Amino acid sequence: MKLRREATARIRRWMDDLLPPVVRDSRWLVAIPSRVLFGRRANVFLDFKDRAPTMTADELAETYRAIQDIELQRETDLNDASLARVLESLAPGSVLEIGCGSGHLAERMAEAHEVTACDLTPPPRPLRGGVRFVQANFESLPVEDSSYDNVVSTHTLEHVQDLAAAVREVRRTARRRLVIVVPKQRPYRHTFDLHLHFFPYAHSVLLALRPQGAYTLDEVGGDWVYVEDLESRRRS
Image (cartoon, rainbow, N blue to C red; front, side):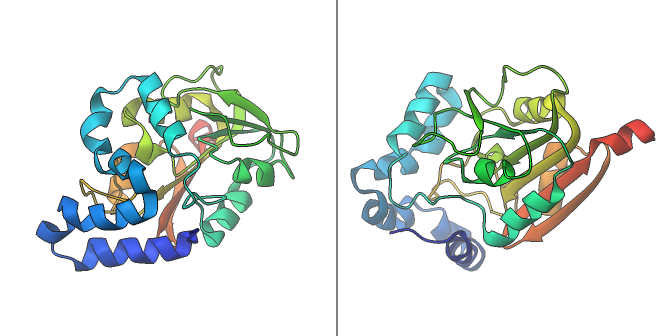
């Protein structure tokens, strides 16, 4: 069963916004549908937030490998409107995508840009369009400072163990433009994803990213899309 991002965003909003917190945060509410969706791997999701703080980088990568083939996984976690916004927000020049997943966005960006994509685990197939893949941890990238005109990260910051370190790496590697997408989601212990950080409000995003130049932040189809112009900081 493959659900479009737009459908899962509606389900998430219904559960997170309409159910009383004492009900929404209970394990049993998520356990039954998780077992239907994920079978014997349901506990990977149910127990993740308890285990993740003490996981090593290798253990975290192994967790993602363990769920890579689950059918709910989509070609991309971006909804159509967010995908279009990311593509139109790029500055001319090179792109580093951090957390490329299946590689769908990297391949779309490669239609007009030179793209390097990285993730904890390799994509399920070779990437097309001349996209270069580098296996790396988001919190410590093997990339020189200001190496890429654009740094793009979609549906990745919510997964990292050390959010502050990940944001530093995003800023360190970018030269002209930052493009970040995170889900608009309330924090709950049991969710149908491996999220560790939550961004229910605009200020939740801004406190994490701490803008240093001119930026826009918009809700697009249940996700936050953040675009920052780093060149505006140098001009000021």
